[in-house]
Image (cartoon, rainbow, N blue to C red):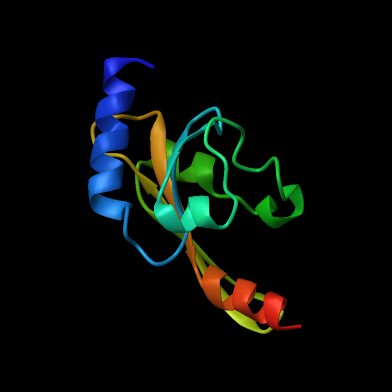
Length: 115
């Protein structure tokens, strides 16, 4: 791992490590560079492609829009009666990386395990 990536991972963990929803730091190639504890606790994997586990959930992904326009993009949707607010946030000073998270993911997973 290059020094720049390690610095990005360290900064990501400092800011997002304890966020209550799963959050990932992702490279332009869709490789997951880091995940917070909520992401890892839900079985999320670091090193692979972000959409490899659930490609159907990534229809409408706005990662490239986020990177191209260098601004946060958001998409609101409904998944099984739970509102999902998905965000793609470009990393300032590095055009190849973004942070991605979805508020509502925990509610959805709780609902699914209760069934």
